[in-house]
Length: 130
Image (tube, rainbow, N blue to C red; front, side, top):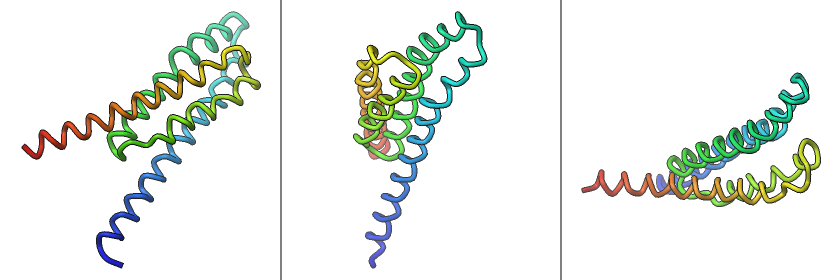
């Protein structure tokens, strides 16, 4: 095999590894963080689940991780799909199914962050080459 093909294979494995790590962290956040609410008072648990997780923690993690993923590994569209699809089962476990649009919003946040990271990487490369 040539050096070029070895480089391409190594780059693909790095990209897949990063995607798996981000996906596992996403799964941990989706499925393990809501368990914290079991140790809180009912009013605190509702606030934690509603505002803390749905409106703050999940979107912030998705946005930051997708920017990093896009910056380091280019545009990875499957991450946005995974963000949406992996959230759907949590609706049946922890949340009400009536908030299913949150899965679409999370996918959009991940897609937007990934595009921003990829765009930032491209912009920095252009500035570096000038």
